[in-house]
Amino acid sequence: MYRLWLTFAQTATVCLAILFVVGTLKPEWLPGNPTVPVEVVNRAPPVVTSAGVTTVSYSDAVRKAAPAVVSIFTSKEVKRPRNPFMNDPLFRHFFGERFEDEAQRAFSLGSGVIISPKGYILTNQHVVEAADEIEVALPDGKKLVAKVVGNDPETDLAVLQVEAQNLPAITLAQAENLRVGDVVLAIGNPLGVGQTVTMGIVSALHRTGLRINTFENFIQTDAAINQGNSGGALIDTSGSLVGINTAILSQSGGSIGIGFAIPVSIAKQVMEQLIATGTVTRGWVGVELQEITPELAESFELGSTAGVLVAGVQRGSPADRAGIKPGDIVVSVDGKPVLDPDSMRNLIVALAPGKQAKLGLKRGQNTLEVQVNVGKRPIASRQAE
Image (cartoon, rainbow, N blue to C red; front, side, top):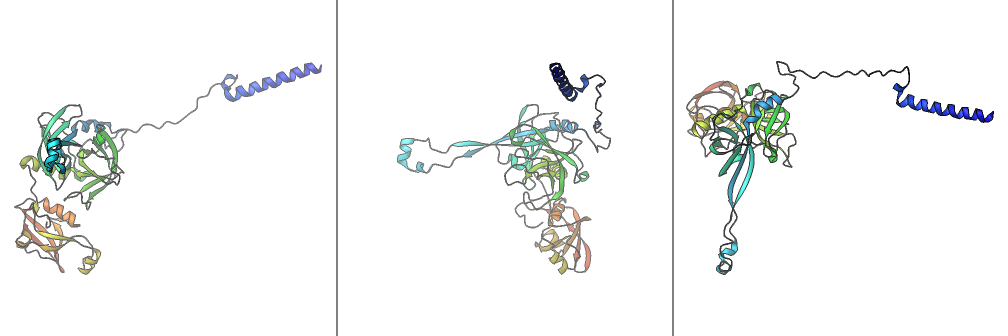
């Protein structure tokens, strides 16, 4: 009897253990426990709206702009320094001319943007500087020889031309519509890996004082820009060009999220002049500018630091003939406010030589408006605007 009871107890224990394991791991195997699907809430994908506020992807913008962004390969001849032993006749006798100057070629990489179906390409001046061979690679792999139509070192822009027709040209955006916080995409050929798209936002507008170019009015963006992106496109979410990628701020040489692009409005002005004449003509009035510090503003009883102080006037210049004097405060150019020396410089150079411009001044406690016949900015002198 004891043995029978022991067998029953062991059997019951094993059955309970099996039931526990099945109930824990596979409850659906037990009768009365049908499989119940877990209810989850899936987030609906965002929908593209007519205002373009919310988008699923920026692929449409990239597909529109990418065919117009090219890779630029340049090379130039670089000579090794002459070996000093070549001045020794005995050395020359034994080794001949093998140690004479040897020409090598230096290669560089950049990007460019097709801005006309007739083969005009916009890029940075430093991408093609001193190059004697320029080759443009289209996104489809086709390669074309390019020539420089004109360049402008003061804005670091250049225009190239290739012998081709019906090229895919990019659409130019309205620069004044760009806002801080807008999403932008950078397209180029960074580090030679091939056409690459990076995304970011407009971090700031009207960046000046970086000492990269003579005339600065940069778009700052955190879209990744690296070596090889120079001259490439910065586009908005509709695929239109808002700027030409130019420089990065980095101690390592790699992107840390501070990149700068030349606004399309400036690029368009320079491009049109380079295509028409091969050079850029800028306005000039002949004044030396000084920033108004809080101390100067207090001294002149201005109330703010807006405007610029005329520190000097070149004799015989348009400003001199118009009666502008050192100590005057320039507050506007043709009705546009002057905030600092960089903003006035940009306003002056945008004026057409030979035209008249109105400069709003403060002289002591008086406010006056002076008519200035704009001159042509001298190429040799860059000290007075």
